[in-house]
Length: 260
Length: 319
Image 1 (tube, chains in turn yellow, blue):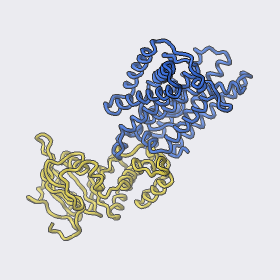
Image 2 (cartoon, one colour):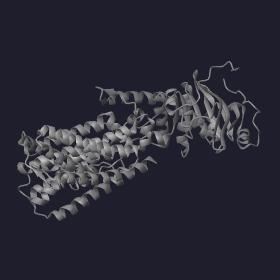
Image 3 (cartoon, one colour):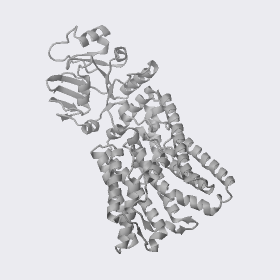
């Protein structure tokens, strides 16, 4: 730890994973900081999804360690990941379209009164507060989530993740299949998350968006992390070259670009 | 009361209430006997089986399932109660035994659906056959009759001006409505029917609630078996034949979506009353029951078409 900036909330050390004889991840080391948006980019099959699944506890790494705020894990389980504050937002998998906003934000963690009953009023109050905090505008808390726009649903999925204790928010292609103004809502939300001190890991193919919102770019290729660059010190051409292998990354150990 | 913000549901209930009152006005013009209290009381009494089983069915369909075994469970429960009383046990003990058998069949239905991941249609179709067969075996296919009056009173007695089964049904429907709309279990049933994966990911044990919903459905079927047996003073092993179809029809007509995730207990109650009024009115006007069957089918079809058209519109608006 030669950097003297703030301590990372999440560090990966030499994470490797293979499926049969396919090496999906090859000794990936990475540090994630609060109040920072880290973009994970790479071509299809570069290992982004595998890395995210290891972070959310779906896969167990073959080798390497995960440190979360001082705690060391050989591998995470979905429950451990959640308890440690790592939340992966999958819009389609986490929202119930037929239910309203409040029910969705609180799903599985409903407030109760008199032990057996849902405390609707308190849930509505806290939902409103949460949405205000994240500057998310919804027409009403009582409409079915299915009637909201894609951008609103994505925002809601993020709000839900935060409400359920997420400190490190992983967004996997959050603007896929979204229109321009909807994508911009999501980008603004990511900016808000950073301002409020959450760590954001953003996986996206949309490089212009990534450049607009990310603090750091971590570029993956063939299961390895080939570069870890502050957004300001690189450009689209360089990133594309690194992603496609036209340009090699820094040799051996990954450059420490983290910190401030 | 119906707090989870579904305008669609309120509208469905409104339309149903309108249809119910319209039908009652038409019937009252067509027969002077229709609006007499005795007849209205009769209609209420006749709606009880459908509504009792419909309450459980609403929960199951909301949770994304289906329960075809309810008619068979009702018959089995009646047979168990009848046999127990003939063996000399008190009516209370007999009722407890019958309801326990109902809960047990719900556990089996729910367990197979939740853990072996067999589709509920197949599971409950199989258990329908098994349970009906068991009922015929334990009774020797012969109806059991004549029970103590404490038992038959539950079917043909009155509480105040209302028949006892009507009071029981009202209590069950109210409890079902509270469960569905005001408790975590109700929220989880609806979430399960809407997006099971989301519920799983929020850390809730999906199998647990799946089993619970089939137990509740079987329990409601058991209560229907109790009412049926007490009312007729006879446990008929073939009783409750096609009761599952009536219950599904009642729930669907009441606005519960067959795709799961949405349902309304009030809608089920109103739909149950609507069907009872329709059957009664047609009978009073001496229209043969064959025509009644056709008409009931057409009404259910119309209701589903209307609700599908409307939910498609909601989904299109979401895109």
